[in-house]
Length: 135
Image (cartoon, rainbow, N blue to C red; front, side):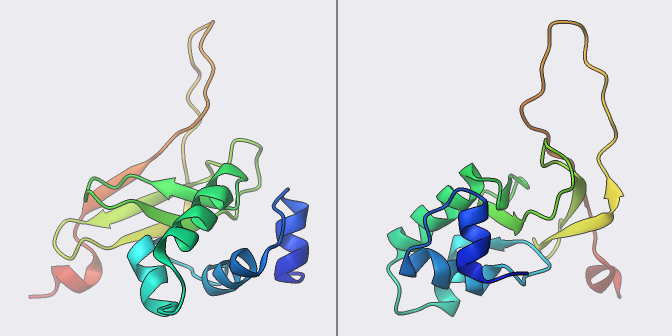
């Protein structure tokens, strides 16, 4: 990845100090994370500043927002190759509550009836992760 500042600009985000710091904290994450996860890694930063940065990143397709049914909003870094930004599936463990990205599995194409347009799609599979399946 180019510099954090350059990457933010490329996606239409003005690179303020807070946004750069938040982006540097999250861009390398392979799995999903919550606002609280980011907060714990950045204890000196204001929660609302982190939240505003995450919202801006979602609005500019730098992050996916995932509703995994746990009641806590999760995010993952967008690594999509299509204009819809919906390339991969997520898996939520019903025991530990962790949600992970399954990058090698893609959301199937759904041919919508005439007159319908897709704006977003989420595909969350729920079950037990390998760690929680262990006796």
